[in-house]
Length: 520
Image 1 (cartoon, helix red, strand yellow):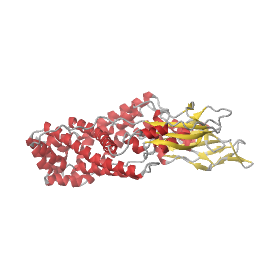
Image 2 (cartoon, rainbow, N blue to C red):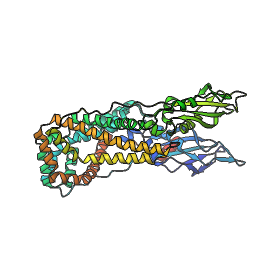
Image 3 (cartoon, rainbow, N blue to C red):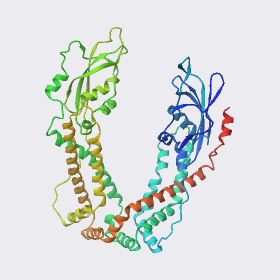
Image 4 (cartoon, one colour):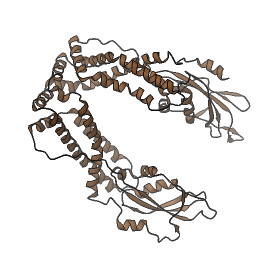
């Protein structure tokens, strides 16, 4: 997305010019991508900037200024200045020692990959296309996709952008949204074409007929159901953690015992300064971030006491864990990681004194859990359960959670007793199974209360049909085709928005040679 342009020069103190500077470190592709100016990124505008920087004794760039940028006032210069932190040259030396000195001028090009022209779809059955359009229109898919296309505009609206006037930012938002609305029919047609290319005419006919039937309301996108599902899914994670906490803490200590607390508060080490006055200490947020991950995840609170040695500059070192609780969760190791963030006011005779440091790690509070009211089995509940059993997304959720739990188990857990780590994972898996079953029960109640038995039975019959199975099988190809079409449409929208924006704003990309002359 960006690259160093040719022509980078270094002017030494003696005015000699060195071409092709010896770079030790350059910005990565990820850094280039993350720093691409937001307005040009949304409108797919390429550009460049040239910066001039001093070179310090370590070869880093300092005191950088923008010599030129094009287009102007769209953030390319500001992005280049931020990027300068990622450069490092081989330091200059005098008598074998690294010294500061010299000026480097760096031109940087910002470019975006080309999406390419949209190939004309061939071999599309006109009847299949017509059925597909009925499906797209009944589900209002175009408006759903428009919400995704609106993401760049929402990003621009989120706040000021360095190097970009607010007026230009808002003009880009207006141009993007106007262009997107102009292409609603194109978006609808592209999605219909993806459906027609990946499914048979008969499959699409049956789906179109079903979606326009009373039973089709059960499987159709519904705003109220969508909001309820979002809320339930959010509560699912909190419920899993809360259930795992309760199950685990019924079997082992999740708080420091009285004996552990006594040891943590033991003042028998009379030569240790037990209540030091810190001039620098980590914030509550930093302490929370340093807590043992497994304990923090399950809401387990703990505390540790370290014995350290005061250093000449007021820092503390040579720390050892004197006591911690509850044992086995890694609180001592967490406190050791935090010890470098503490500092005392330096004194003439302070170096070498022993210092006692206590660090408390509070527990997090969980949000309300998913709760299920006892209910009497009914025909509606049974029909909904059978529908949910056939939902393709159910297995996807289970697989995703399994992968997440496997990643947690495989991660290093410094200072944690392996038996504690194993017990946490057993509790987490059991809690997920329980919480997911509760979520499905809530969803079953929700659907059973909103639809008649006849609607549910019709939806279940369609889910059992050959057409539904064919749709499931086509889903990978359909997703790939839809994503490709969405990318092309997003580029078309950006192109139209760019044309409108550039009527009133500078979008010219001045030749690099001209910028170099301007900078001299």
